[in-house]
Image (cartoon, rainbow, N blue to C red; front, top):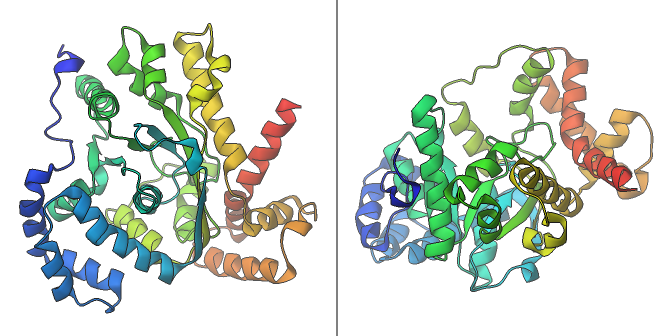
Length: 385
């Protein structure tokens, strides 16, 4: 079998600086790209001016600073009430990390983290993105210009093994050889039920590149849990059919355009407030990782990552309101106002009504989606006590 150290990354890596001009040229020839840019800037910046600026860009960093961060600024201003962050003191500017992140939005989770890094003069991270999201050539160009690398989904047998080896090797190469940080979601696919848990299989995949000494290899990746929370999830109603099917033990089949629709809704939908937090590197908890190896080490990494996320995930009034409505009490009434509760119930009623199915069951699933972050924090706190 192909040696991990010798595997090539040509089919998954981001574009190099030497490829930026050609990549931008391909984007400028696509009408969908123009439409996206015009939508993002809402006519405040004419496309012709953007095009002129793009033609002068020669590096990935210039592309991110010159286009992506500006577009994000407009999106945040239009669709959120505020965007805050914390925990930046937990990471060093000249050090590469594996940012292990909660995943609620297909595009914005990683983009907003990179925005914080860029605005605070840190190097941005390379971004893991599933190949199911980049089927259009122009989207492939766009994300690879934005430091994204491709995760091959849906492989079977030997192809799946090779894809995992390649991915693990590329992540290790980025951090340990290129000194480039990496963003990756803590699980495959977005968290839909509000329970943010790291998949053990992901940690096992990361360890493949260090198969001779997986424990020290995982330590060398400098894993940092990252949590990002949205007061309102613009895609919450779109998630209900899948959650309903799962609750009824039915198979759920995505529509062909569902991922693209979720991407657009996540970007353009109202989010309320947004908060991102950089947790402490897991290596800071080295006392918890002594004298363990193999499966035990994987479970310890998962447990530590989840613990850091549960305790740093920003809880909004919507989370506390949903928890009280779900359980039927007023335990958290000091965490929200009557106006905030009325707004949440109005939004919930409208969004649940837009989905086919048992309204009571859909309401329960909707409430759990927002209440589970509170419940998970309470559960872990009780376990610690």
